[in-house]
Image (cartoon, rainbow, N blue to C red; front, side):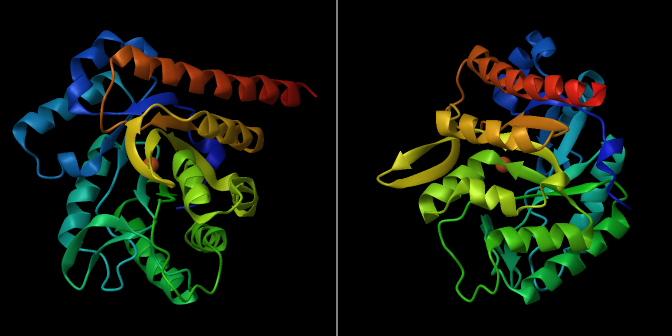
Length: 286
Ligand SMILES: [Fe+2]
C-alpha cells in the first residue's frame, strides 16, 4: 500500500480512551473528535471489551494503537499476535493504525517495556522486514511512533532522526510524532528538539501525541501523568508551522484529573491546529 497522506481524513483532536473516564467521555462527546484505543485491550475478544468497542465505534472514529507488536525484534513478529491484531484492525477499519518504533520482546522474553533500538543499518533491516510482513497482513496505512528512552544503545551508525527517517521511507510508513517524547528525549539527552525535527521527513507526519510527565531530579519521566508542559505546547506550535497532522491525541494514563481539565487541553490543541487551518486556507486562495 502506498501511503497517500492527502487521502487520509482529518480526524481533529481526540484522546486516548481509558476506562476511568468512560462515562464522562459520553457526557462530553462533542468535545472529542476521535479516540485512540490501546489495541492490546481488545485482542482477546472478551465479551465486555467487545461490547465496549462496539459502543465506542458507534460514537467516535477509532484509531487502534499497538504497544506489544515489537517491530524491532530480530526473531521476527509473533504470528498469533499479528493475526489477532489484524482481526481487530480489520473489524475497526480505521484510516490508519499505529505502533512504536521499539522492541518489547527478545529471545522469547517479554521485556514489558518499549525499548530503544540500536541506530544501525542492521536494525533498519530487521524493522523493515517486520513491517513488510505486517503490511502484508494488515492492508491499512501504518504509522510509527517515536519513543522515549533513558538508555542509549552503543554502536550507533546514524542519528535517531536518520534511523526513523530511513525506516519511514523504506517501508512507506507515516509518522506518529509524539511531541512530548521528542521534548523529553531532547532534555534528557541534551539535544536541540528543533534540529531533530528538521531532520525528520515531516511530510510523513500523520498524527501527533501530547501529554505531561514529571521531573525526577534532572531527569524528565515520560509518565503520561500531568498536564502538558508549556515547553511541549511551544514545540507543538513549531511542529504545526511545518506540518498539518490528520489527528492529535492527548495521552493521559496516570493521575487522571476531572474530565474538564482534559477537555481544556483538547481545546488548546484544537486552537493551535485551527491556526494551521487558517494558514492552509490562505495558501489555497493564493
Ligand atoms: Fe505516545
